[in-house]
Image 1 (cartoon, rainbow, N blue to C red):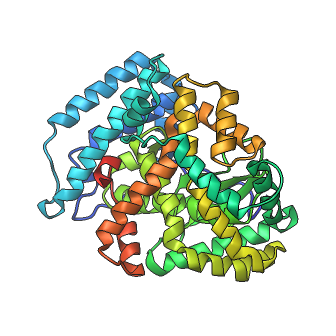
Image 2 (image 1 turned 180 degrees about the horizontal axis):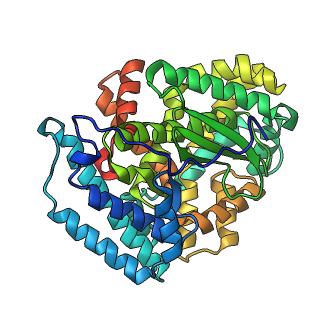
Length: 436
């Protein structure tokens, strides 16, 4: 374990400030928002993965557990809320009308995803693309084996030698594993650097913080459990070797400026300042996740542009991990090629969930085209079993967020302009379709 142990869940002791732009007393949609939160909590009684975060009144969660309303009843409530939202007129300060429009669109999209998830829980089957559209408001592009083969040819040229390419790549990466005894120090330094770079451009509440734990037996490599009051618990899975690039990846993605910052800004600006209580809950299988995962992945590049990242890792993290700093640039040249294979995981999930291949074939596909060693490929299939089409949120989400931020920042954007556009997205109720 690292840092302070288990952080406490902060539910029930939340406060909302009323401001001129619209606090709880001025919110004409307060009833809709509260019913939405309670509906999400009720679905969580049937789906253990559904409620990713909740920091509203504790009695709402207690009531959901006590009642445990049946799924058809919850679907009727979702339909009722959809109708009420459709009838609600746009409200709020006219000067701030665009945020109210985004809010209405957000609630509509979230409710649509709720109905799709309820249908799935009652046995409805969607194709991979139908499911991702219904839950995440987006459909990932299709890629062919030939596209991945072209990248694998370039990678093979980078890693000459005997044996299959995946074996050569696996042997190569073993030289970049963070030793277990050094893992804590390396992650601490990566977190410090990510936080420092983020705070240069993003104003965060002085009380924000997170705790890190190392865990095993999970289908994911890292997870941020946001707990309200600007605090998170971040868990890092150590089932498999942790490579040097994962330090910055996880510190940024789960922490700064990723999930922790995203949730902090939503709580600060939307839930507390505006009194929009719908942001006291985060349903995982919803359009919000594409924004969350997309900003978390793109946030790595915002905080650490490639040249700066290589220099930082060469000068700081490689020595801390006991690795040869002279190999940093070569390592990231190889990783840049592997990154081009990120959509191979989507193709495996699409084929597997559509029933055209079985789980062994899905693992073999991920091993061949995504360059995952077999144990990691099997772990990825377990992730797909658990989270299904959620996989699109990482790569497609990153691509959509990147395009949106770069467009907002203008041609040849400066670092401050990119950060401003990125932070504005983190603080807004925008849907994935609103990024296009």
